[in-house]
Image (cartoon, rainbow, N blue to C red; front, top):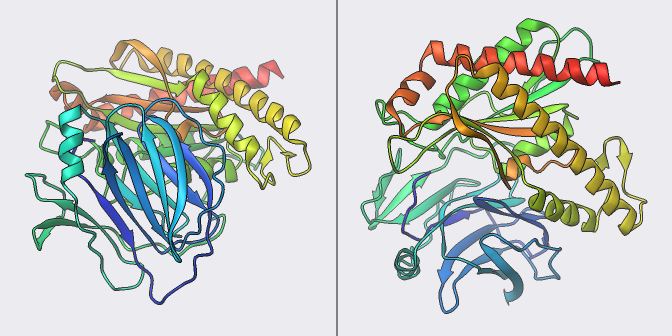
Length: 420
């Protein structure tokens, strides 16, 4: 995703007034994202940047201030706090360890989470973003949302200019269905391992733009994800579900929670990379870093409602120290299995898919943070490189990636069965 040196604001409007009943239930600080989750639907949000010191501020309507849940610090966030701005509005402020700007903002369809995509910036770009106080635009039609950017030469897909701002319409909100999950296909019998394939980006979030015909990362990731799904189903050895099988937007934590609700045995998120120089090329595989693991384990164990079931164990009645240990052990086991699968992927894909020399990397990507599901993020190549781009958008490229992933999945579950 390209860095916009501008302030962004996202607002979701619902008809009629509502008392502030929701509180902040969790905050997820990722490698390139910031997600605030609520225990009830909220009415809307506005985001702006502050300097002296550098901060990201959120004014959230329909929320009452309350003690924040434990929040990991490190990376771009050094601290957080909240206070009541009015009867119906709470302000949340994130102190920044390094200059960071917001490049995208999206409210979940059920109004229970807000995700900000972020990117590092230099001091000048941050100062420019602070000065670019974009006004919040919205549609009065129920549940219709829009994102507003100041006009500074920024181009956005499907954008329209209105009152001196670029308005990017978001797709209509989907009806909220509690614990909704996508269909599961393939496999003979419900005892077959379940693999969840996550096609990155989607909807109003196009991802990186290819140097090959200006095509979008969201389209490449979906086409590759479908090819992987079909190849896995053809083996008859596993069951498969996709977080999205069309051009829709999903917030990051929604993707990993789909895998958790389905009790998946493996989660594979498919993306394509981008770099300032067009020489960078080759696939790479990310797994969760050790530092991120400890932070996520602490937050999950500290939630007020520990009714989550982890590897079949209900943590609801566990003491805080016991649940913390259980979460930590589960996450460490998942990290080890994720790293093992990453090695298999590279081994099986490398004959037909070019890889970077240092193919295995570690990062705190939000989609990798399910503590009880082994998870990898596959960067299939570089959209900024012409050879990689042509490969990713070709039938030959999709087939090569799908065949390699399928061989790796087969070997991974064969190893697990043998170890039992």
